[in-house]
Amino acid sequence: MQVVVLAGGFGTRLRPWTYATPKPILPMLDKTLLEHVVEVVPDSQVDEVVVAGGYKVDDIEAYFKEIDVPYDVTIVRETEPLGTGGALGNCRDVISGQFVCLNGDIISSLDMQIGMDLHNKNGGIGTLALWEVEDPTRFGIVGLDSEKRVTQFKEKPKPEEVFSNLINAGSYLFEDSIFDYIPQGKSSLEREVFPVLAEERQLNGFAFEGYFIDAGTPKSWSEGVQASIANQRWKNGQRIDSNWYADEFIEIHEESMVEHTMLSSGASIEKATLSKCSLLENVRIEAHSILSETLVGRNTTIGRNCSLKNVVVDHESRIPDNTVLSDTQWPIVD
Image (cartoon, rainbow, N blue to C red; front, side):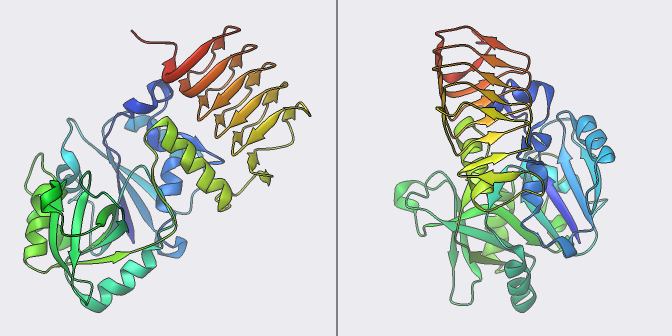
């Protein structure tokens, strides 16, 4: 089976990391984000992953030529932003038969086999994974009948328009006849395609439980790391307490407090406090610094007595002693 990953964004909320590396191949534990995204489909079902994107796609292609994954990776390039519908429509010449389509930054407990079984039972053109929320007004909402067929789809409804707390979870199974509903050029699955298919009763939907994270911000990236640690989503490395250790080449002072953190090779932490952080290779945290929900690039030193919360730190950086940062990036951009 083919799996399309919609990866058309620039990863702006994870800059400066994404200046050098496109978001799909940012490391989350010992895998890339894209590999985590694809894991919702059973390994035995995936023959080819088709990446629909435009930003640094040559880097994505080169990366997957160098590593061993159990599927082929094909790049379909966008020369301009096309929206979710246009990005998928741009893949029509390389897709054949039934396929899975996934938003490129979702970390979740979804088992797409459940969607496949429902789709094969009910028929139709598509089956949507759904997630229940208290306030659905920021999302696409879905109405279901007793047989789990979609009766309505409304993108970002006003409060008075809400008819369901089930939202679109950005993970789909489609027949290739979906392309008959997608116009050439820029378009939106959520605003132009799904409402029509819902009206024609050509969509199914199923809710899942567990966790559902859009890992596109420093805070939500940290949540994705925590979920991946808690659910053992790695091949190499090990979990010690609530942290993931890449290997044995990590030094942590015995009086440090470190929790829910990704520790890559070469990490050195003096008497410091870290919570919900991601450290790439060869990061040094000096004494009495406090970091939370912070992403630290490779070959970087955080000085003494620093306080960083919700910060993305570039590679090859040196943050001076006594620096206080919150909700920003380093180097700071005016």
